[in-house]
Image (cartoon, one colour):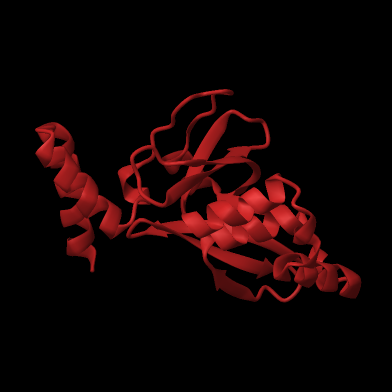
Length: 183
């Protein structure tokens, strides 16, 4: 399996989306970017770290990372985003010594990687399929339909029909039907 190293670039709100955000990641060369949907709580958690809030050094993720660093085991791990199923990226913590894989929510894994400086990777074929060209200071980013949850898909379909955007509604309906057929 080939993998691509990712770098955290930032977090932003989804325009028009209630209580949702996007974690923006790029490849190391900053030629491609991918967005991972997250909830408002994760936006808040990143905000604490990006704003350098004094309390952060005693928060659970930071304390656990200090324990792992002190034990010398943190360098045994990496984060790997390996697939996308029903609008959710599948992510694992991979122990490179024992090859044990521990499933983890993608946004939590990205936060852990950010705090601990643990390497963050994505499977190359997935990156090629899901990413878009990176443009510094871009004011927007398209996200693939297959990277939104079922709930978001239903809401987007409803909104497209309300706004008489029938071509978009057709794409959304097709994605919904595709998901139903593979379940």
